[in-house]
Image 1 (cartoon, rainbow, N blue to C red):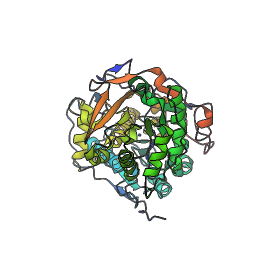
Image 2 (image 1 turned 60 degrees about the vertical axis):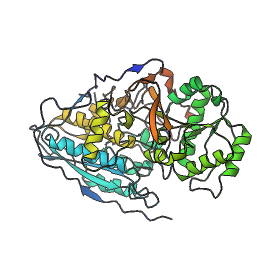
Image 3 (image 1 turned 120 degrees about the vertical axis):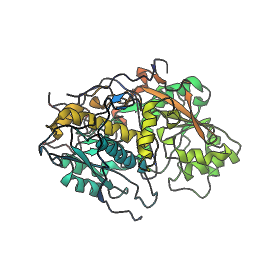
Image 4 (image 1 turned 180 degrees about the vertical axis):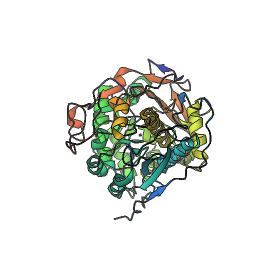
Length: 485
């Protein structure tokens, strides 16, 4: 009995989570429309499974809410060993991130922290229908993600809230053991359109979030006459850029081909690259890489050459690290697309404040990626509650496939997880000095929503083969769990 979330006070205006790769991030959240989904040499830490402490169980006060969403957690009388990882008293689920990646320690740690914190928040209320949630955490460490999936397949009911940088490496294993998932985000095309996965903020391979492209054409008409994509040697971001470029052109951008590609591991001197872009006529850049030394050194090189273009950035650009670095204002022309409420809006958006409070209570890291995991946990918990004692993967997939309106209690714009369709709404954040703020629309809490912001990608730019049901076909077998009427 899938449920549609209602009552979100955030105004969605008519006028106006791919994520982390090895050291780069690509498009995250997108637009929304109705569409069908399948109905009927570095050293890394080895994956480890640990059980998160549940904390003392307390009686939840009547009417507990998360933002606008009634809490799905509480006492009850559910019973039965109904599926893998389910007992009379416990639900064993998996989550994970890549924090053990030696080249970038702490990678995606906010996602695991958010899921751990939300599990404690839920268990403190009594769990799901009285069953306590037992959380197994698996460090994918980038190179160990498939090993983590193999371990989870032995003992866990579902994956919830996870974020793995190269998740496609575990997709064959996931599909093979019928590991249903409600991930914090998806990256690889096979997982993004994979069977048995329902993301709170979908990131499918066949649609592209396009709000920023149209908004920039309206707000910065001169700059979009010469936009250079920020190309790197990392294949994952280049695959995503092909989709970005297709959508940019549809929005009226003049996309330049300057013949420049920067190593994602860094360059000894960025000025030659910056000069080539300047000579090419670049008035602005589009970036989908993670902020870090490569982009920061590029900003410095452009400044040293006297150029101050605009930088349009995917959601991956919204980081505390970039803000802390920007003490000289070299990134003051950065504009980032978002479909989540930024942390800076916490005073006005109750769901954001609750997310911060819940995660900080366990000493966790907070950022927008953590919001994604929190929303996915709430989506999973809501449908798990609806299953009652009959908590099975089949029941979960039946329920999740029917959820067509979801905001995580107000954490983000409305999405359609059941149809794997992202939001058709967005907002723009701007960095000024070390502070992020909402730039457009001006009113805090408002989104800019238009149908055209959900851009359908042509099959030539897909990263995999997708069937007529919009399910990636690479690893499909006869025994996958499909939604039932």
